[in-house]
Length: 391
Image (cartoon, rainbow, N blue to C red; front, side, top):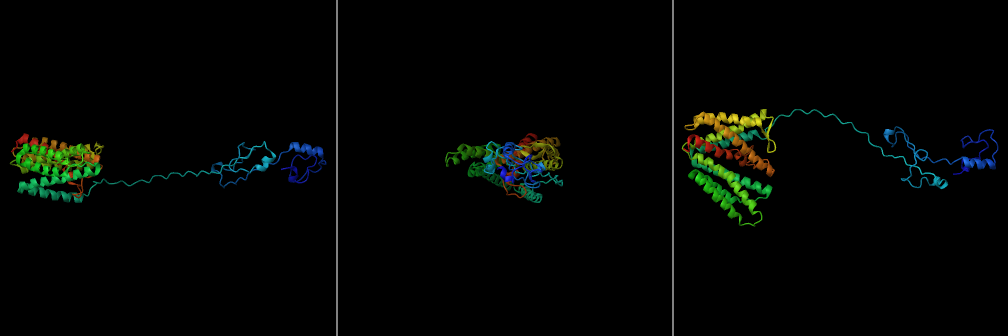
């Protein structure tokens, strides 16, 4: 840019360019004035276009911020070539900076949380189906128990085989553990019959033979995982059929049907008391890492219900039994039933499942109903032998 671009040559007394031209009365221009004017003036800088307020500039600034060598000495990077005409005439001048045009969105005020309506407690299962299945099982058990003992032994054997199938199936699905089912099923059924016919000696003998059969049966497959599979097989043999054998041993007594009935009543009453009291008054968790639904209040309910039922049942249903023996029996049943429930919950949590099966609507599988019964059977058998003899 040079002086000629502003119009007529400036007159004497003129102090800078103006849209109105030279001042009136100024002296004539001359070479001396031209030289002086050339030393006192600078070309007009090119100011980049700045959007008006309301455009894309930052909202928090209120108005557009001017930028350039008159305001900030920042190099021009984003649009090369725009300041070239000015730099050609003024090599020492700093290039123009660019006004940042990256608006930030206005923060949105969070909406207040809407109050949620209170939710009712739920049992977590279909109570109608659970009650119906429970009544049906009770009818079958009572009918077989008091009419033909051999039929009840068969019911125990069937429950054992189905329970073994559920347990081994879940082990294979969730942990890839292949406990041999065939020797377990055959040995388990034989164990129940031997316990009924020969007592504790027959039960222990059948248990040993079943464990040996598991070891031999697994040898027909590759050795990889042998120790893991046979260990699971021996555990399954002890956990399901061996503990169930004590029910058959109770049945072998003269008043065996009543002993088994007391055993079933106390276990069911204990579970019912724990559920009813825990669901209504439960606040403190009993074992949250194993079974979050169980509470200490529920355990107290199980103890109270089982002790009351034990005193009544022992006094009126067991030959030579007394009410105080029933109190101790009920206390032991409540503890063993709770531990048995927690034990299977531990297994299911390790396997990552909720139920062992789906055979019984509203209950899960057979093993989900045997969890409290299995560890309680040897406790009731032993205490009844101590209190009133083997019969």
